[in-house]
Structures are given as structure tokens and as C-alpha cells.
Length: 352
Image (tube, rainbow, N blue to C red; front, side, top):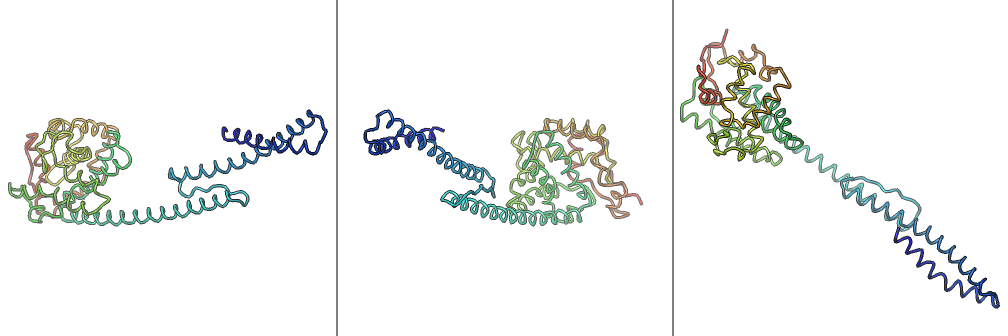
């Protein structure tokens, strides 16, 4: 508005002198009052017409500026109304063309990125499926851990990309087992010390696999550190407390809960009430107390047992060939060692 007022004053001042001079030349002996009146009339008319012209100009400039700001703030494809045929309308046409082209380019880039991400994720899922085909214990386990991890993460206030990273990390937390030999991964007995050390390498294998997929880089620390213990006695980095990525602490809690509550050929899955004392023994040692409380809240809000929502007892029994036995996975052995809950594992043959 200051620009408009100043423009009117300037226009009026510039107009006053020639109009007054013209009135004097025409009027000859006209009284000075008449000359002044004519001059003032001319100034008013000129000022009003000038103000209207400037208002029209400023209106279109504001539209252009609004369009530029909208595009700068992410409103790609934003169009500015075009009126008349003048320099400003040509500028508006150019801005609209630029906005359309940028929108088209952005859409193409997003589509390309989505295709790359989808291809990478499908590749990783194929690896996970390969693990599931080799190891009966992981079948259904990753999806259950992912679902519970997301619910726990929500209880802790995670949203957006952080929530997505937790979900992907949970789905992929055991992907490194693709690098473990069958005679160890599928051994129908408790692992020896040296074999256990080989099994402990699966987070490193997972890190190497996922590190090559650019969009999964934020997930790598979650997969790599999901076997860290809150007291620093875990592996591979012996991280302690909040040195461990929050997503890894969430996955560790969900992983532990699933290991305790799932029906397996070597154990009867415990109810939440039976699992809670075991989990409490792990508070501050294996599990982050804050995350454990969030897990309790997530399970409390959903009274069904997560361990049973995807796998029936019959399906569980059929995972092990008839007449064979299956050892408890290393994770379960470690948990039962920590809690001193006998018997540690039962090697009874699967029911026929």
C-alpha cells in the first residue's frame, strides 16, 4: 500500500505543473482561481487513473509472487491466473510452463525412486523367504516381530520414516542367517561354543547385505544391533543403554516376547501373564525398561496373543519332519540361561 500511495503522489506532482501551464496558456486572462481549479481537477483525474493502473499492476505482481512462493514451498504444478495480453501475462505463462515442467520431472523422479525401492525391497524379501525355507523357527517369526515392533514404536511416539525403519528392521532382523551354514542353522541339537560364535555372525552378514541397498541404510543399525543387551553384555558391539539405537532396542524386546510366547515343537508358548515374570527378569539387563513398558502397553491394548495370530498349532508341528527333533534357537537358550528357567529346552520328538 505504501508503494501505491507514493505512486499516486508522484503522478499527481508530475501532472500538476504541465496541467497548470496548459490552463494558463488556454485561459489567457482567466482568473487565477479558475486556473487552480482546472489544475486540481486534472490532478485528481490523473491521480485516480494512475492509482487504478498501479493497483492493476500490483495485483498481477502479487499473483506472480504468490505463485513463485507456492512452487518454492513444494506446490509443484501451481498455476497463476493469466489475464490480458501484456508483459505480465507473458511472464505468468512462462511461470506456469516452468511449474508444469518441474512437476512432471518431480513425478518422474518419484516414480523412478519408488521403482528402485520396490525392487530393492523385493530382493531383500526374497532373501528373507530363503531363510524361512531353510529355518523352521523363522517362519512367521519376522512378520510377528514386525507387527509388535511397530505397535511398541507407536507407544514410544515414533512416526513417519522412523516407524517405517522399525518395521523394515524387524522384518529383516534375521536376514543375515542366509550366511550361516545349514549344519549350524538347522542343527537338531544345542549349538556348541564355536558354533554359537558362528551363529553370532548373522548380524554382520545382515549388515553387509543391507548396506548395499541405499534406501535401507537407515535400517542397517537396527539389524546390526538387535542382539545388543541393555547392560552391554550383548553382541556384536557390546553397546550399552541408549548407545543402542532405539529401533534395535524395540526389535530386541519384540523378538524376545515372540520367542517366549510362541508354540514350538520344543516348547509350549507361554501366555502374557506367564511371560511377564521372565521379561521382568530381563528388565535393565537384556531389555530397555522404557521399551519393555511400551511393549506391555501395546499388548494390553490388544488382548490376543501375538504369537498365535499367524500360526496354528498344526502348522507349528508340521514345521519339523516327523520323527526328527528341533533344538531351541540360540536366542531362546540365551534368554532361559539369563532367567534360569528350567528346563531350558525339551528335545521331545514332534507329535505324529
